[in-house]
Image 1 (cartoon, rainbow, N blue to C red):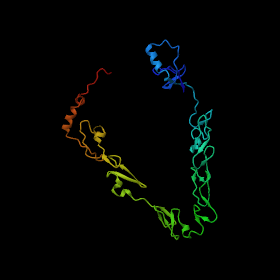
Image 2 (cartoon, rainbow, N blue to C red; image 1 turned 60 degrees about the vertical axis):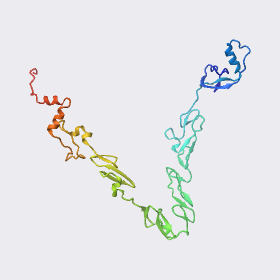
Image 3 (cartoon, rainbow, N blue to C red; image 1 turned 180 degrees about the vertical axis):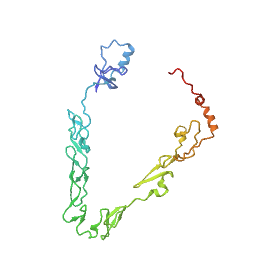
Image 4 (cartoon, rainbow, N blue to C red; image 1 turned 90 degrees about the horizontal axis):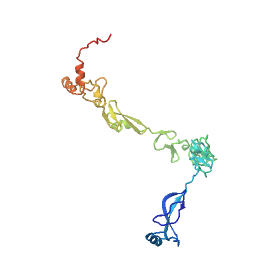
Length: 310
């Protein structure tokens, strides 16, 4: 930003050549010149009265600033480690920009120049934290997370001190807990004898009130989630289903041009749910429609051979 010449606040002097006016002004101090005699009397009095408290425009000199696209760094705008499509292996943030170093700040559990490795104590492709209490973990990208217990410790997480847990509780399933040090009991949400526990099957939600679905919908359950689908001949979101009116959905419900469509219920391929009104009433209504009377009369005209055809 630059300041233009200091002048009267009524008409601040313009910005220097090559500079852009930002539209803002700031206060400045200036002193009247003893050679300024060409102003008119009123302007001279006004200018002299406020000559010390003057204004100047805030100007800006347009310049080209080098910038790098996101995930590019240095003056040469090099690509961050991991490549354009996968910078820092999507497991870190690159120090990008013209002044950036290109170094990846890896997320928790990851390490490496491109954050493509697991830190110590993390394993698997997602670098999951190991859960060993008293032992070392099979870590790294190819690790399994299995714990190798220190001497005197046992358990899947090396959480039990040898001798502190009864022989029966050592047989407890991973989803079971030891009760009073003598027996295993499955955790809430699981069932079994304690040495083997499996998830409790969810209740049959569709067995009561059709799972909340409409009476004309099919209820399907997956886990604890219920999906409702309207049956054939009905439409809606499954929780509310309405019969499909073919008289509205299709042109005249598929009836003849000389018949009136009447909706009586959901469609059925073997027993159509449409009835024709009185032929005489339907016929008279159709003849009143534009073009129908002409087509009807032409159907009674005899065929006359064209003598001009050889």
